[in-house]
Length: 242
Image (cartoon, rainbow, N blue to C red; front, side):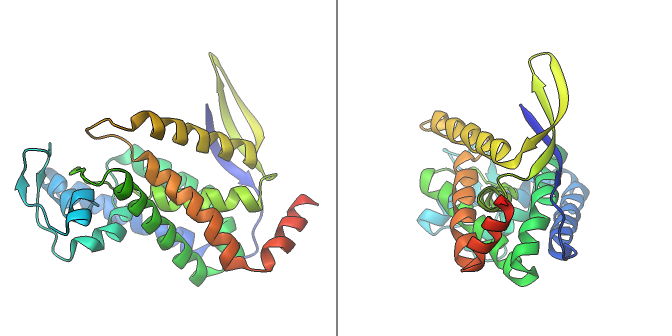
């Protein structure tokens, strides 16, 4: 079990977009908390509900196949493919996503620049949401969280900085140690856990983690980074290996 704390991988740019994304997600979460009992309605309005996307309808009220009561989306339900990535189901959910965004996001922003990084982040989140919809097309449970977009950052980091060292809390049975772990080891382990969990969840109904959103976002990050960096990708990789 790995729990990353920070990476040893300095950047040249100030990570304005990474910090802004963390602030936006935190503000939205505080707004959720302010809603009290209406927080659930907010999530069903702005979270991605696969059934709504695949059937082109906006579910309202309690349905036979859904454990939650749906509320109407103020805008097109397709907007939820993006809005859902700024909503979180709890403090631990938010903290985990923002921690990974802070550790790995600044380096990818440094490579792409602010504007491209915004596009990269949103594109990875969109692919992640669509992947979940593809795998669970009839699910009526809203999916929320920045996990898909952050997963794209992890995929990008893996292929461009696999040898970067990450200060990590490692849990070995009853022993706990803080170690420097290569990013490649940490992120490959992360992907394997998500892939195994995703395959194990196939055919199951009910709520839980949208594992395939993580997988889709991760793979999207690998592909998109190579496309967006173009010829610079090889130069950065060679420099990182040296």
